[in-house]
Length: 253
Image: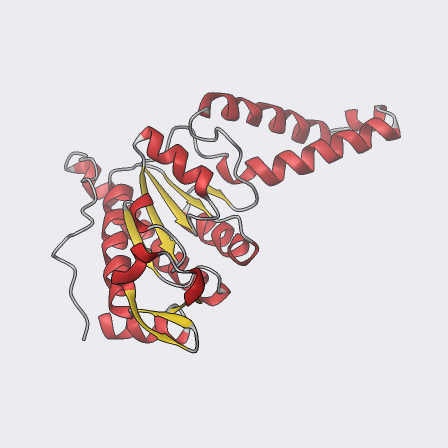
């Protein structure tokens, strides 16, 4: 299994980091070498981080908790939306709304306005408004749909945040840390690994790299969901706290 994951990671270019001049020294343990002024990420560390994250996400989904996928950069947006929908978890793929976690109740209340606009658009009432008002309402709807549609199903705070590039999504990571929400993140060589609980060192700019990691993490969520009915029959348990130095992840050669 590990060998097939390594092959997938290499083919997707997950091991390519940023230019050496842009690196964060805290990423040194995850860097294998420097080639043509580019840092090469140690693929063994990527596999360890990925397997550890998958194990934790499976535990979280088995417990019936929510996992919020966050990736708003252009390269990540489509993959995050697709994988979030596939595994039935909320996602933010366009823009992180300030207070999405720390001011959760207010953000949730905005969904009522979105549903109101959808009902208006689907009926005949919209036609009774002036052209200018119709345009304004449609503009408001598009903006709200873009920002809120992915978190419709988030009726409570998530147990975990899955972030693609914590440097770009620093506001999301900050809110999660403030509330004690576990963070899993794909981190490149310019990121600070201390900012997240379960780092997955890897290329967070390449579309294929992001797609691959997102797919693996979504598969872990689906695996946990598949075990959920059996777990409920036998009594629910909450997810264990993540261990950044877990020793049960196999090393690769």
